[in-house]
Amino acid sequence: MLILISFFSCKKDSSKNAINYAYIGGEIINPGTNFVVLSKGETILDTIKLDGRNRFLYKIDNLQEGIYKFRHAGEYQMILLEQKDSILFRLNTLDFDGSLVFTGQGDKKNNYLINDFLANEKEEKYIVKLCQLNPIEYQKHIDSLKNVKTKIFETFKEKYETSTLFKKIAQLNIDYSYYSNKEVYPFFRYDKNKADILKSLPDDFYDYRKDINYNDAFLSNYYNYNTFLRHNFSNLSLKRHNVHSNQEAFNRNSLCYNLDRLKLIDSLVTNVTIKNHLLYHFTINYLSNGKSQKKNNAILKSFLNKSNDEDDKKQVTSYTKSLNNLRKGLKLPNVKLVNYNDTEFAINSLINKPTVVSFWSHDYYDHFKDSHNKINELKEKYPEIEFIIINTDGCGLDKSKKMMNSHRFDITNEYQFKSSEKGIAVFAIHPITKAIIIDGNKKIMNSNANIFSVHFENQLLGVINK
Image 1 (tube, rainbow, N blue to C red):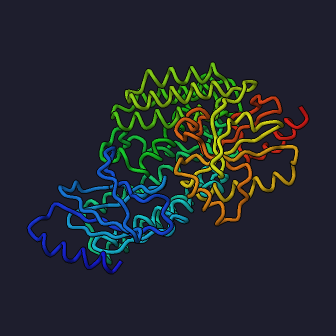
Image 2 (tube, rainbow, N blue to C red; image 1 turned 135 degrees about the vertical axis):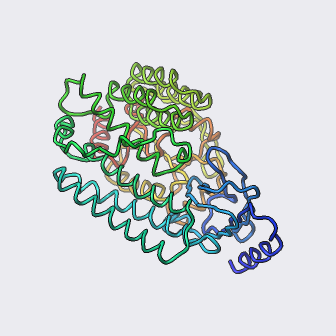
Image 3 (cartoon, rainbow, N blue to C red; image 1 turned 120 degrees about the vertical axis):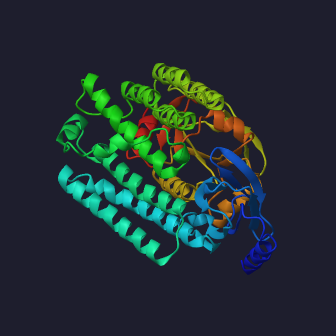
């Protein structure tokens, strides 16, 4: 890192006349790929290769001050860049966010922002417990959390010189985190009757909503804003849904509720980027939990009528088609796999008894570890079940084999897709946690199982006793 810092100094000295630029550089420990992708909003600026030491350095000319995104091996994080910033970061992919540290000119504001991000992640787990309180007590607790953040922010401003842009973003962080905590309250309460929870709220509980801009172009790609919008539209749709729903127990996967949500987004959001992000997010989430072809097609139709992103439309249409081909009772699509001896198989040739097919990717390290450990437990408990485990990355056998060996996982029944792109599409792999349960006749029993679900072992017993 000293070499990079020295390089920064030389470059800044030789560029005294140019002010509209910034440098970003870094070092990545345990890299998943040999490059970093840098983007601003929807635009990818460049794919930057790591050198032999897993480092990179990049100059952004004609800088547009604001939030940038750097992505590596499926993970990403935000960075605030302003004129003449020369920011270095160091991270370990095994703890992407938690290990991230910034140095260089512009480091203080970015370390503040990443620490705030990590604090919000911890807070989310605490919020679930707080939501079991009555509305008045809950309000007191989240007001207290906001006050703590505000004091930290004020102390930071007193200690360091800060720009108007940074102060705006830091304040938006505090505000939208607080608003999100308000919006999730009805959903995180364990009570099933959400209509009664909404009625119990103080009249001024959602007063801030009157000042919300649903079309804020400045925040259109900003994490906290988009998180708030997702919670907000879920909550607003809940109230609308309750008007014509007869069910006391709320079902977030009901078609009616999800159609209401897409309609509401369409009616309130005019910014194309924001609208398309929200429509895509909620549609994919619904489909990934859907079990009915008729309902899948209904949500797809609504989505296609509202989105104007042609790529999103193609992806969601393809995803829906694949899900419909994975319905219970159908035969598993016979995709090609290769094992770690580079031998090719059609997947159905491997299935001669009840089988679970699960997936992993280098992009999700914790899931890789946890899923293999869980499957090893399940193998001991259910010898009647075969487990086929597929790496989805398509990055070559050597890398995956090395990862398996480093954790001393057995590579028996471990495979990669012959074509990762085709395999991911055919099996509709979203999220990565999905697993497929197949009976001894190669027929699908459940194409959307989860090995970590409390219901999973009962599902295994069901296919064993079939």
